[in-house]
Length: 286
Ligand SMILES: NC(=O)c1ccc[n+]([C@@H]2O[C@H](COP(=O)([O-])OP(=O)(O)OC[C@H]3O[C@@H](n4cnc5c(N)ncnc54)[C@H](OP(=O)(O)O)[C@@H]3O)[C@@H](O)[C@H]2O)c1
Image 1: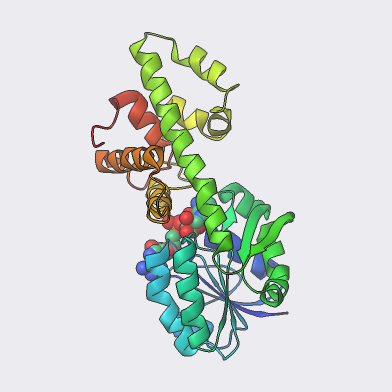
Image 2: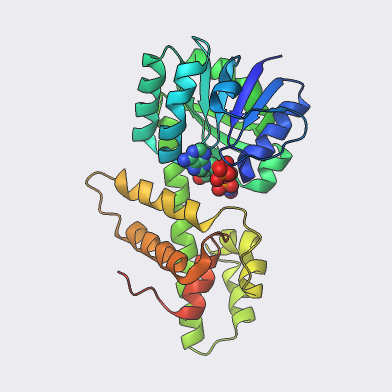
């Protein structure tokens, strides 16, 4: 049994915390906006959550939120505690946070997840870990609670998991924008939307449609799994991490996501970008 603090009870963090509680670990949870949670102690502050923790799991929005919370963790967690950062933050931030943790006497691995609320609930996420082998080994029993053991892997030193995660989400964002434009084109050509969706299901867009076709057909993106804000955050992280690579397509997908946010789709699932492009024409911001 391990003393675990899990910080961040959003869609993913709450699902992960339920696995930790069910496995019988000594779990304390915290969320910035006070939230009820069955099966674990709910702490009123980061300090209260981490003060007795052997492992501190972070599942926050992105690098800015981790940058806000981590100093409190460093100040109050016991020396030697292991920080498992499951937030999608990008490799530069992961290395920065590892330094912050190390300087405060803690250990750190980045462990972003692949898969959405369904796999988080089922405990079948992919987990991409960057960090020291011994820290990975120590984190593994916990990672197996929310991850499919066949898809939990150490991919390198700190930052490696976060780098791979950005590449994965670049594809998700580009596919969504491409699908939206394909539907916009089909609309301009007077094609039947259902027939087009049937055919596109057998193309590269089939992955996106497999998950989001019902939302796109209904034009209703309120059942958020992976929010449009998170997708925009990840595309911006990809662009910011790209060094000399121009990533023109990724920048365009980011502009599309931003345009959909500006058009009022904030809070909705990222599939809203497909509908926004399909129904309201191509974003004019790039
Ligand atoms: N949803 C997915 O399908 C999915 C899949 C893979 C990876 N991810 C990644 O997993 C992470 C969590 O995703 P999610 O879907 O659970 O997001 P979410 O539902 O939007 O939850 C975000 C969490 O971060 C907290 N937070 C935001 N800003 C904060 C700050 N400045 N200080 C402290 N806490 C802050 C929120 O607290 P409040 O309640 O107070 O706002 C909330 O607990 C993200 O990095 C995301 O990119 C998500």
